[in-house]
Image (cartoon, rainbow over all chains, first blue to last red; front, side, top):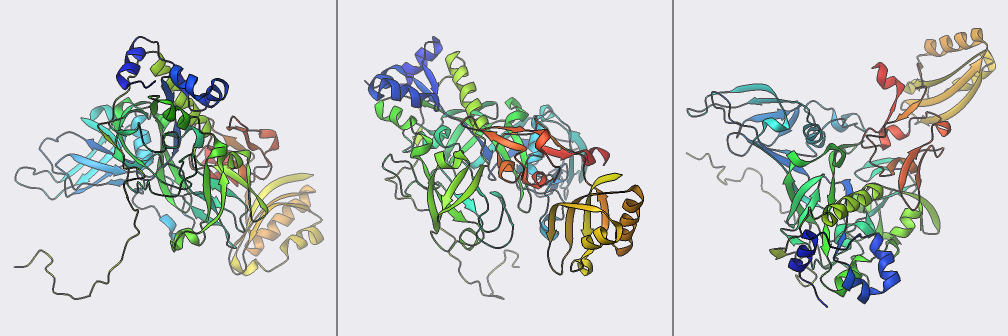
Length: 413
Length: 139
């Protein structure tokens, strides 16, 4: 009994669609069995709210009078540098860009109080930010300096663009050294006195569609409180990793690239973050609907925390050295969410970086949007590379560069 | 009787000296160490609660200042800014008293002010600035 996205959309438009969150559907399948539940359920909603460094936004700030070419010049927003290698008034701001003059880690561990992620949050909150720019000036763009307040509504376009998000599973971080370490997985106490993890697990979008059967290029999603779209596979998309019998990857695997209009978003779901000793980043709320086209898709969405495993990695050596696979242990998200894991016979307290409470809230909001007929599903125009793609996630292969080589620098006369 | 929570910072040249002992022995002060971070040849930092007669307390503090020990009051309380908290639970394994805690299986994060000893360990652990001190207001 297969359904099509068009049939599901007709039910959504008529407010007849049966929608559950990825948490609720576990119980539905347990109670009714997969076949019966697959016939009844139309959509399962997922959610995630966690930091992701490959986040950013692009802006068109509007032309000045007289005109000025920010492209190739220098621009800061509230002191945070934006990328200007684009046309006259287009800029890109990355979440990890650090405020100019920040001491960074010269006084370790640095606080990284304000960065690109915070600027995006401030803009979404409707605040004015200070735009400072210098440019070299041309005949068509003569102006060389600019200092002004600007807010989101002043801009022509303000678009969130994450080249990677929604990591399908992730490492569990510990520190097996003798000193405290400061990482993007938080503060890790020496001798494995704590562990951190970062996945919404049974609510996480790609863990509910492990082989990417429904989520692909063009999938309409909840993004930061507004509507967004999946652009395609995110950077480091790595589908061919070891998987469990339920086909769920046992370590970091698929990723999504996503985009959406910042002007629709809400500060509750767009948050700048500061990781002491590491840097700034940003957390975005994302919810992805999964159309229940057949029984297999439904069974995939009923995955539970106890069925999803992750690898415990030492962030004092194995991770920074990147010398190959080095898992200390495999644990389930049920264990992680119980508050402690066991590694080498020792009990280690565990805490999350991904907010399960907010992931659940996002899945519920998306559920209500769909139930109320306000959010229609899309058919992906292209699927994501899956386990048959042969894709390989490579480390950088460094090659020696000879000094003083006569290679042209491009300025040759 | 005076009782105060203080943050003492010890310059590297004092780290190997038994200063707390002298506070007890010379000035008859009760010193309750809430938290200590002392690395040989580097700076040390200690969070303490000192109590004793007002006179002894003052001479004890003067003694510390005279040695070059930095003395500043500990925040009276740590505030949880609920609006800023995304309920990730990162702070909950860092908090030594369980004042910041998570309910299971809902995974909601809460703050029990009564259990908080204002040790401030949660401040650097929160990426979202969802915990602060009353000192922040003064700045």
